[in-house]
Structures are given as C-alpha cells and as structure tokens.
Length: 272
Image 1 (cartoon, rainbow, N blue to C red):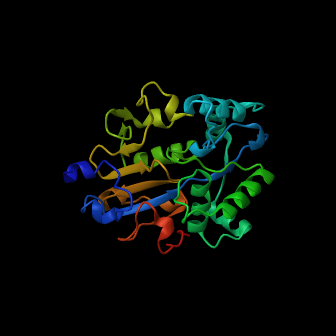
Image 2: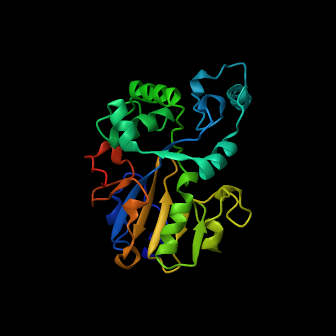
Image 3: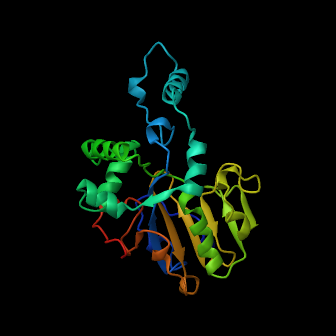
C-alpha cells in the first residue's frame, strides 16, 4: 500500500500504529468512547449494545440464522427504546461519564483494565485475554446507575459534534467522509456533520456507515476500529496546530509502540 493510501486508512491489527504510517502523521490520539446517561432513560428498558452469541449454544434442530433471529427477538421483547432511539437521544441529551470515573468507582487499576472488561463483554478477546468477572462487575455497575456503556466500531453519537469541531477548528469547511473499505467516499460540508441528526441516518453520507473522516489536505484523519471502544485521531504538525484535542476527548497520546490492541501493552496515562 502506497503512503498516500496510508494517510486515509487504519493500520492492520497489532501493528505499531505510528510507524506504520511512515511519517504521514506526526501524532496520534486515542479518544475513548464515553459512557453516558440520559435523564429519564433506563438502559434496562432499552435495546442497546452488541448482542453476543456463541455458535456452540445454537440448538442442532434449528438453523443458525433462525436461532440468531430468535435470540434477537427475545432480546427485543419488552424493550421500549430501539438502538437507533438510544443513539438519537444520547446525541441530543446524553451526559458523558468518563472512563476515569468508572475506573475509580469500580476498582479498575486503569483504562486498559476497563477496556479489557468492555471487549470481554462483546466477545472481542481471546479466552486467555478475557476477564469475565470484570465484565460482569462492570455490567452490574452500569445497570445500578442507569448508565449506558459505550459502543464499539463506530463514531459515537456523543462524540460526533466534537469530531466535526476538530476539523472546523483546523480551518476546514468540508471533510472527506468514507466507509470502512474506501468503497464510498464523499466530500461534504462540515455544517452537515454538525447537525443533531445521527450520521448513520443521513442520506448524504455513505450508506453503510462512516468509519473515516479525512481533511481535504490529509493533515487530519479520524478513524474508528471495528472491534474497539475508541476513535483514533491523527494529525500532522500543521494539522494539530492550535488544537487542544484533550479538551474535547478523554484519551491518551500514542507512543511509537502503541498498537490497536493497546490493552495488552504498558498502560499510557490518560491526558489530564
């Protein structure tokens, strides 16, 4: 892959992120997807988050697809709010809860341990890396406090306005939006991205969801990993000039060793 392509796509899993870009970007910031609450909304009455199914649990008398549909229907039963409804309400009325707060109140040593619990909850880790006890503890905490955990693999509704603001503050009036694989890319006005509507519901944006935001001059790039609870924001020295990214997002700066599975690496402290 040529360097120009690397300036607009995410790195391979477990590859050191910044070296992989070969100098296309000088800095990378891991922006953590926030926990959140919405006044009057109880997560126990909402359909939200990833439905995790084990193929080994499927009864042999049912086809896999029929069993998956049945499990989805069971999960939906009695729920008052759909995932799209939760996302829309969170974008307009959500109150962010930081990872730092969740760690302190649940005796997680750091955000790497919390990330392990989150990724365990979606079946996103090998068995030797998973921590089921921590995942259960986190789920119980969120239920008691009517708190929604973040979603993985997409730009979070609560972060969308701030992500658009990054490009606006850098002086851009438009941004290149793209799906995961680069099959659908469109240059759109920043004002479109600053609306109250969910990005995934906008007809003007890629049909199968946005995974990448790219400055027209390639000086800034935001990308979300498909199986993780964070958004990566990259920039050149010129792109970062004047931006105070840590005031918009909770997170940490990449080292030269940081890879997409940073929960297994030496923990880099969150930016104060």
